[in-house]
Image (cartoon, rainbow, N blue to C red):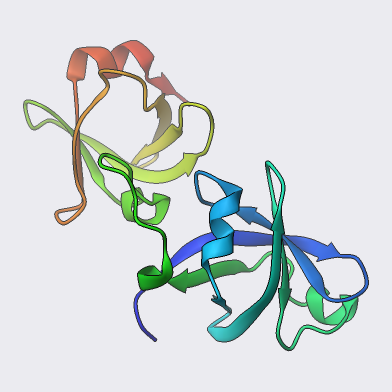
Length: 167
């Protein structure tokens, strides 16, 4: 399968005609309109219709004709071809590209890896280092550099420890 990115998670069936409610993993749920086909569980589905609100997308998919068929997709990830994804502005990244990045200070001190990102007005990064876990916001001055190719995120040490919350 060509290179894909995870763009959402199916929350539940919506109605009786096979539509599914999707939690988008994109900055704007309206970006779901860009995708004409998606992959769920390794299977390709043509997007027949898409509507969105502020927090969710509702997709009608080929081959998903009723609520029972939609129920089988509950909890599954929705992926799409990276080539179909809308271009991002400078300094913006897809969540899937940031997860797994090593986090280091500007002095090269290893702090852990990005395990998850909780979308919010200021995204919250979940950092894991072995058994330790914590969170930090992507607030001004915290992140100095993002190197997607080398899976590395550099943070300002002083600012990072001002906002870091260990779990």
